[in-house]
Every structure is written in structure tokens, then in C-alpha cells.
Image: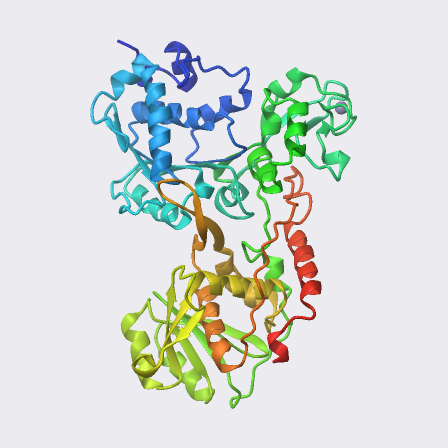
Length: 551
Ligand SMILES: [Zn+2]
């Protein structure tokens, strides 16, 4: 009979005491994975790891969950992007690790399946996030979101409710990053931001390892000598230096314990191997940044970044005359969010709890047209439409109807209804902001909260739940997005009622730049700035094309 986890003081004593092995049957050791030692033992309530591909985190997570489930009696929900990922992960990794460790095997004798495992008196559930099946309704003490950035983020957000009745309420996220301020990078930004620091034996300078071909002071690899070098004195760093690193937090008082694990800190990766990878024709910039450096990659069309939006601000208040044609876009939910604008841009946004405020606006602007979300407040929106016949349109945002029209206005019996393609319309509005095509009247203070709703929307790949193949793209929310959707409804109305029909084509080119995390600044250059560069280029290209303001 093996000793139980609760008979050990911590997980490291257990790993050694029970000679725990990985899925290949090799003992867990930290010579080649020194940076994992502290993460194994980290008992933070919120833990986040922004990482490169294949750095040993899955094995860590399996063992950590097993030990903690047993020692602290935690029920755990473990999510992966798809059901196929769950089968591969549990069948290929979890089960093999358990089979290689007698003491673990004793714990899981009952109720052992791909989707759930009993560990002593605790349960661990495995779920895909892109599944068509209903979300699991059990309660948990710990949520683990593996490959968070490939997962469905709104489903992950919904899982937080599963912790409600737990006294532990732990959340672990780890993933290679995708877009800035999204998924694991958003978690990382809220964390204490631990970097793996090494000490140069030549000049004693402590530094973290980074990659920047433009700036030698930020470049830990010498491309000519094919070696890791000190960022200060440029002397070669011997191999042991990376093994002897230590985690240093940038912020002391953040509630999330965060680790950044680039492949640069993995002792088994030589400088030469990394350079070859970097120069390999099949290595895309996105792959290099997200899977090797473990940093977000900025693809300019996938998110409405702050500067892309703020560049549209006029800095002054402005409002049209009461007899001008305006469009009000309205999203309904617990509250009613709306934006107002016309051919000269957006001039107001707000919210209310009943329709009296909207009725007042319809009276004040006698030619106002309203486009209102038909899928939220079913009763209120229809009553509002009936009070203003011919001036209020109920809008249904549909899914990916690739063959259908972008916007379809109802005729005859369906007059007063409009169908719009949600993903394509969001993309159009984002691209128009990025290309400075929608003036926004007012100041940053007046529009910051409005932008926050846009910041909760990101364009994600849609994966087939079974095969993991990319089927398309979808804009997903990870928080409030009501003002953004109100703007989409506004834009639908603008197409028909103000001649704002011409559409800027979404830019699909991927920009080969991302940004570096710096221990003393948040980033070593401003990621937004990079986006603006991309937008300016697009503007030049678009100069001769149709602009809705010229219509
Ligand atoms: Zn040095």
C-alpha cells in the first residue's frame, strides 16, 4: 500500500517518496525542467501560466490535480478546447500516467472513464468547451482551463459559477497566448507576472531571457555565435546559467500568481535549435510569437484595440439638429444599451432600464430610425416597435450564413424586421474604426467605458469539436459587449437610411510583429502603436476607394 498524498507535507515529497513517473515511465525530475519546480508547489487561488508549446505543463497539471484532489479533497473541472482533445488528453496522457504509478492507480479504481475520474473521495471531470453537449452542472473547488486561448471563452466565463459553493474557489488557466489582452494574456496582465531570471557569471547582471532582433539590449541570443548571451555584457551564458534561474515577480500585490514560460528558458532548447526554428520557412510569425516565445501575437483585424478606437475621437461634443436623420442602435438585455449617430459619426451612447428614455429620443429627433435587438427583451422591443410604426426595426443577428446577404430587410408581412450576419457586421465596424472611418464626437473620458465593451470581443478560430480543424472565425465575448452590439445595430440602420452602404473590406494580412514583455515596463513597445502602423498603411491603400462620407 502506497503512502497517501495527505501523508506527505507537499507535492515534491510525494513525487520523490512515491517515485512518480510521467506517461513514458520516466521519473519526474527538475534538471531539465527547473522552472516547473515552483509551479508544482504553487498553492495560489488563481494561477495562470502563459507558455510556449510543449514545456511539460500538462504533466504538471495532471499530477498537481491528482495530489491536491486527494490531499485537500478538491473536486476539479478540467476543460480543454474540444471533446477530441479530452479523449486524446485523458486516453493518451492521464490514463498512461496513472497506469505508470501504482499509488495513483489505487486512488482511481472506481468510476474511471474519459469524462470523469474518482480520486479518493474527490471527482475530476473533463470537458470540451466547443462541445454541443450541455455544460456540466456539478460544483467544483478548482477549475482548470487548459489551452484556454483555443477554448470557447464565453463557456469558460460561465464555468466560474460552478465555484460558487466552494470554500476553495480556485482557478488555474494555462495556454499559449493568442491576441493581446485576450485569454491567458489578459490573466497574465492581471497577475504578478513572474519572469525567469538568470545571472550572468561574467558581469553578475540579473536578467530575463528575451528575443528581439531589432534591439540587442533585448536580445538574449547571438545569431552569429549561435549562443545565449548576456543582454548587458554580451558574453556567452554557459548552459548551467539557464538551469539556475529563479522566478521573479514584477508585481508583489497582485491576486493572481502568473508565470511566463517561453521556450527560451527550457534548458533542452539550444540557441542554435531556436535560430533554426526561427529561420525555417514553415515557421509563421504567429507560430514564433505564440508557440515559441509564449507571447501574444497582434493580428490587426482580430480586436478593436484602444488606439484603433480612440483615433476616431474628435475631442468635442457635437449633436445633430432635431430635424436631421439619425439612427439609434439598441441592444437589449438586463439593461437597454444604445448608441446614436448619423452620417457625421457617433455622438452619444447611454443606457436605460425602461423604454421611456428611448420614446423621448424618438420624439426629440422626428426623423430618427431605431434598429433594436430582437433577441433580447422580446416583449419590450416589440412594444417599442409597435409604438413607432415604420421607424423601429427589429434586428435578428444570425450566425455564419456565408451564402446569404450581409443584411436582409423584411418585405411585405416581414416589414419592420431585418436579419444581419453578426460576425461579418462586427468585422465591418471594427475595420471601419481601425481605418478612421467613423468619427466619434467627444473625449476619451466620455467614450472609455463604451470601448471597454468592444475590448470584450475577440475574433477566434472556430474549431470542429471532433477534428479540431478550423471551420471559420467567430467574434466571441468574454464580458459585457452591449454597447459594441448596439453599434452593430446602428451600423445596420446606417446602411439603409443614410446611404452609408459602402463597406471597407476586412484586412486579412497578418503583421509580422508582436511585442516583448519587459520587467520594468509593461511592454517594451506599445502594441497599439503597431496596430496604428498597420491601419495607416491600409488607409493609404484605401485612399481612392469608396468612402461612405463621400456618398
Ligand atoms: Zn554579463
